Image (cartoon, rainbow, N blue to C red; front, side, top):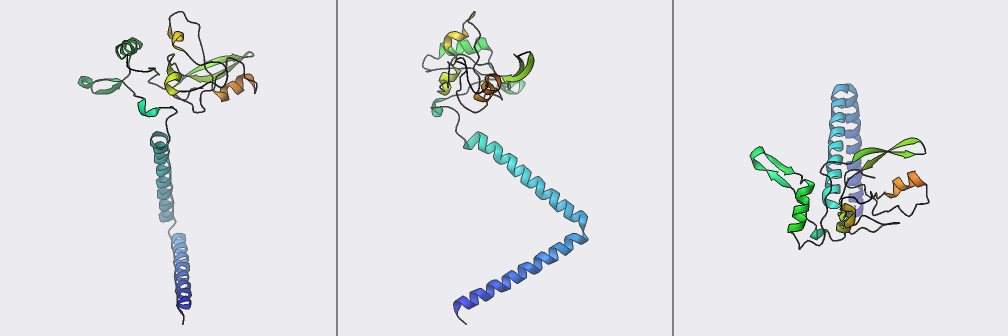
Length: 198
C-alpha cells in the first residue's frame, strides 16, 4: 500500500471514530437532559463573558483614541487617599488654575467625569430626547477634530456671557434637520464621546 493509501485509510478510520463519538454523545445527552442543559448554559455563559471582555478590550486597548496626536494626550484627576478616593474629578475652578499653571500645554480641555446628560429638544412642538456632554472650548482642538460644517467650540466660548454653542453629531443633525445640514452643524467624528453624547 502506498503512503497516500495509508493516509487515506487513516483518515477514514479517524472519521469513523468521530462519527461514533458524536452518535454516542447525542444518545448520552438525550438520556441526561438536565446535564445537557447545564452544559449548554455553561457554554452560553462562557461565550457571553468572552464576548463582553473582548468588547471592553477592543474599545479600551485596541482601537485608537479619536485624537490626532494621542501620545501627547494626558488625562488628569485628583485623589483623596485619606478617604480612599482614587479618581476625583477636578472642579471647573481647579481646571482653570491647572490650565494657567501649565503654560507648556499646547491645549487643555475638560470633559464631564460622568456620562452624558439627557435633555429634550423642541422639534416642531414635540420633545426629542438628546444626550449632551458639557465640554470646554478647547475640547475639539485637543482631539484634532475638524467640522463637517459650521464651526467647533473655541476658547472664547468658555468666557462668562458668551453665547451658548452646541456641536451636533451627524446622526443627531440628520434627525433634527434631515439630510441637509445647516451651517451651525459640525461633525467632528462618528464616535459618541464623551459618554454617549450626541
